[in-house]
Length: 211
Image (cartoon, rainbow, N blue to C red; front, side):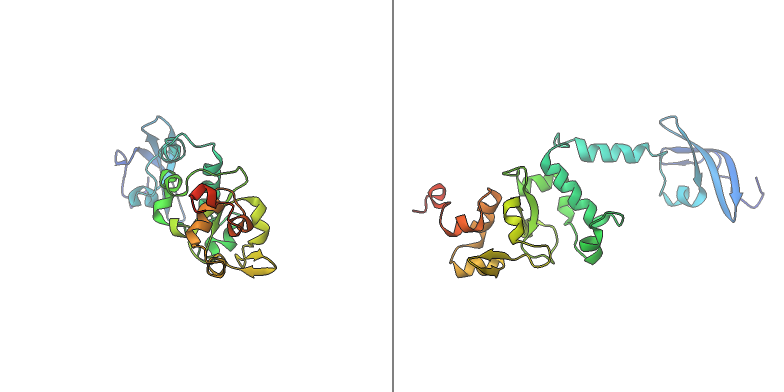
């Protein structure tokens, strides 16, 4: 080991203990480490000292495991939608990133926890429901999102978020004003699988007690 290099042998960083000098190339020094789980790995000095690498990879696996499995809904349709939402807003390699994260659409901090997301959105009323936003330029957050059945998706494009009602293309807010129905009623019954037309025609009323 070159004398100019600070010897990190024996130092502990997170779950890693430095065993020995490994190599130096183009001013980058690497160390052979052993993880608490028993695995060996090679880690650069800067990643050790900055705290960016704290294990052989097992720590990240455990964190992801807890995030995805602690709630017992890891293989549900709701969880699949949640994962897809997170990916298209945060993962630059995701095919949908340019239309979401790439243009500033974010997921609210509360919804990075699946249990919070499920508490706010509730279960899907039909398997083909997807997450829709009232404001297409707004973030994924409780007050802007609802489940929408696929049968209504052809009336609500990702560009305009407008519904075709009786030959008119209107956003949800305009529909609510035009037909004098509270927007929350639309959102509630859209989540339950009703179409815009059914809500306008009052099909939901017998269930709300609004005769």
